[in-house]
Structure formats: structure tokens, C-alpha cells
Image 1 (spheres, rainbow, N blue to C red):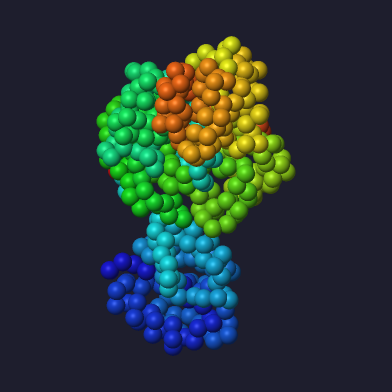
Image 2 (tube, helix red, strand yellow):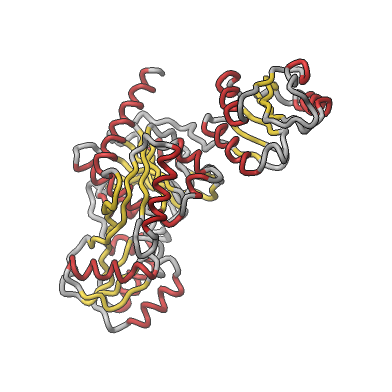
Length: 449
């Protein structure tokens, strides 16, 4: 039987609680109770004599649960409390404490399990995970991979995507230059050639193992993935560090020795303070707040998000960045149609950057790279005005943009999204320090067996 802590409150009559505990003891080894508060049906003497097992009381329920987990090392917390003592918001905080210690948390009509990390690699693992889709996680990951490779640290990226391959796929980005034609060939084989592992291999020129996942839980767990198989493959490649790249808000089910959390600036403080935001923040060793664009997010909102992070984790490095497109081939003197996943309000800023930095003329654009029907409409409306397609390697970049270019007899150039510092800590030294931290912790876990 698993070891269970039970959360109780004083709004339930003790004989009722004792009967519930006896029923739970049939299937669980109930080791202690955590008293969450409430006085209506029990006085201050509610203790082990009242409930028939040890009772942990502290100034607040969060501290009581944290201390009880440390003392009793349960597998599961069972919540027998209720409103008004424990609210829904309280339950997320309590569950976050349990999940952060690897303990499941369940109540009458819900259960939360900690993100799975049973797979452990001999290669030190640095996780780069996000709080949602389109927060800039892959761009940050690609940048960090290039940075590590440039510093003489051989990385392998383990990328988990919703369009990943059936079996883990190794791309030797460090040996092969994957062209748009190569990606078109992959697309014709039925592969999602704009998946994150292709973006990593093309933009970073490092070893990449692509995996798939389906479903994502509120705390980051996946419903299905082949990532453990991919981790075992990546572990054989002789890399000095394995970068575990999350997918949306889902976390790779592999043990991470260090974690970089990417938060979208436009998401707001709730992604840090509410639901399982505190759990994600507590597991991080550094934070990137990405997409801090005045055209999209008022500077005071970004400042509030930074402040929310620092209130909970004042010791964490916090890097605030935005992104600018960098073509991986020359585009000077060309009439360009630019496709992106960026919001419409940001497109003029990105187009101006391409023109000023790389010498092209942007004659058309589309923010609908992730909406195939509208993207096709935008391309058709601009047909004949451009002699080059320029696109991020995401969503429909290959199966719509590049294939349309082939039809029109127009080449396609891919762009990388490069982080640019807006404020806070510098990203590059922070990432290098995290890589060193991951290597140090991996050595310690190997020494400890």
C-alpha cells in the first residue's frame, strides 16, 4: 500500500473524519493527518487522540503540509477538507507543494500527479521549458544550443513536439546542412518538417533528437510521449550536455539537472502566481521573460511580471528579451513576402528590421503562419509582387509557404528568431552558468548512485 497523508479540517465533525480515515486505511497506509484549520466542529485539542493518528499543525496549512511531507515521506496526499477552510485557490497551492516534492495530490473529484521524471540520463540535462505555446521557448533553446556549441560544449537537443516523429529521430545538424529542399522532401514523406527538432537542427547546427507527445496536464505532465526512448538515444551520442526542450507548457518526462523557465511577457502575472505557476517557478534555476515588446505588452505589465517572479524567487536570474528575425541566407535586394507567427501588431516592426538590417524590401506579409487557410489567402493576394519568401520554421512554413514558393518558382529562405536583451540579467552568461550547474549536479547524482 502507498503511504498517504490526509488533509483534514475542523469544519467536519471528528467522528465523521475518523470514519473516512478508517475507510481510506483499507487501501492506503495512512501515516498522518495535516490540519488545515477550522473551528466549528473541533476545538484546539483536535490531535492524535481526536483523530487516531498523528496530526501536524502549523500556523498555516501550506507550512503544515510541507513539514509533514518532510517528516512522513508520503506517496500521496488525500484531501478530505472543503470550503470554506480550503478554497480552490488554496488547493492549487497545496497541490503545488506536494507535486514539487514528487508527491501526488488527490481529492474527491480530482487528482494531480507530479510531472514524470523517471528517466535519468548519464548526460547532464538542462531543461528549457515554457508556460505555454508561442512564448519563445524554441528560439531561446536554439540560441542556447548555439551558445554552448560556440563555447566548446557539445550539446544534443531532445525536442518534444506535438508534430514529432513516430519513433525518435536523430538529425545530425552538426554534420549536415539541411536546406529548404531537404525539408520539403521530409514533408512529402508525411513528416511535420516544421517541428521543433527541425528548427533546432537547422538554426543551431547541433545534434537533435526529435520526439512526439500528445496531451498536457495542468502541472506539465504529458498524456503520451516517446521522449524516454529519445532520451536513451540521445544519451548514446557522446554529448556533454542534453538540452530537454519542452512543448507548449508540457515538460519532458526526463530528469532535469537544471531548468530554464521561459514565460511569455504577454501572459501576465497569473502565470507566475496562480494555479501551478508557483510550482513551475519553484522548479526553475533561471527565468527568461520573452516577447517583451512595447507594441504588444505595456512596459509596466512586463515590470509587474518581473516583480512577481522576484517576490517568490528573489535569488533567480531573470532575463527579459524580445526576438528579431535573422535570415540564414542572404536576402539583400529582394522583394520579400514575410510569414510569421507573431501578432499582426508586431509585423511592421519585424518587417522594418528585415529591411534595415538585411537590405530587402518587404512587399507583403502574413501573421497567419499557424493558420493554413488564412496563410494561403495572404500568399495568393500577394502573388506576383515578391521574388522571395521569407519565413520562420514553424507551423505551415514548409507544407504551405515553401510548397507555394515551389509552385510560383520562388525560393524560400528561413529565418531564425534571435533573442535581444530588453532588461534584467544577460541571457548568455546565465545560460552558460546553468549548463555548468547541470553538469555539477549530474556529477553529484552519479557520485551518490
